Image (tube, rainbow, N blue to C red; front, top):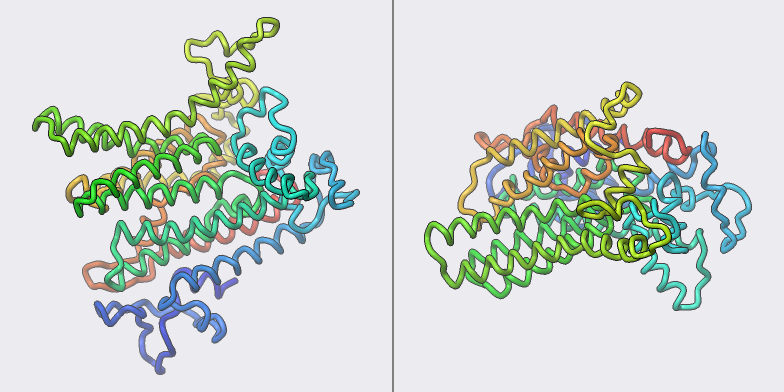
Length: 476
């Protein structure tokens, strides 16, 4: 375990080093950047596998080492804990009569409902709070069409596989996104990209990025959408307008799917709102041009695509529940009918300051570190110098807005502890932690207490959370 954490903070360089010589970055030939000496060198096997001259391979090895560790933590838990809800699922497709074990032990907490909805569809009004089962059911349908046996066990297994694959792809997407924002020509830039992606592996979401949950899917869709949006700025700078527009609209589709899976995906639409305001101001103050007018139209279209992902499910629910004159639900009479808002408020007691009770103080304390990091990194991005609005570096400002709103809403309106899970899909705070370890004046990578504390804290939290999750104990 110490080997993995040492690698994440101080990656292994290329080749061996002679005695009494400080470890250097594998890219030090570009800029002469030196790395701080770690307290303990990784074993030779890990030194061979985890090398920065092949970042994708190193990230892949680190990813699966971490996933195997989490797997054993969750599956070796002693029992079902205080809640036996998992026993309500009938695992007839595997012949299991008692509590599930192995990968099926990841079917805990909300994933029980996700698995049931994915199989049977939306039966009850309160199930409309969950969008992830819609996506899961599409993959399960593939098994059904191929003639395979479909049941809770196979559905749960599909969900576990989907979470692992999307989390892995999200790590790679963050690496590419970081390269767009910070560049990748120097040792410092390479290390920022690599360490940011490595931090995403041990995200405080922990076991929720392995279980049948929507968080890893939203993370992948968000990271990939941010990557495409930043790539559209590069295309804009290079004068490739068609490529720019294609990337903008593709990112909008990804954000729309993310919103369907989990509603906080809608916050990514603020990228389009930001650019729409900037472009509209340019047109008003400088006069319209064909270039700016077309770009504004594409941005507005992209924003509408994202917005449709929240509007369409509400319209479908309105048709089902509000056009039935025998039993019209209360939310149908709202000025803006929303089954999602009704379910969150009526069934889950979500609302402004509703979570501010004495009994929830421990949960606020649990979420406090993540809330502080999200707020500080948002402020860091807003105050960071950036060039023109079409430069990839200006993405920091764009990304600060949705992340800041997420933190404020979690503090005031959500079940605050979920911020440790849903923050996994936002790249800004990873960059903030990593850049805190870079000394740009001396071109050295220092031992940052902030980064080291964050790494050890996330690892410890994820392992403890894994035990609680596997044993069906709160507050996992």
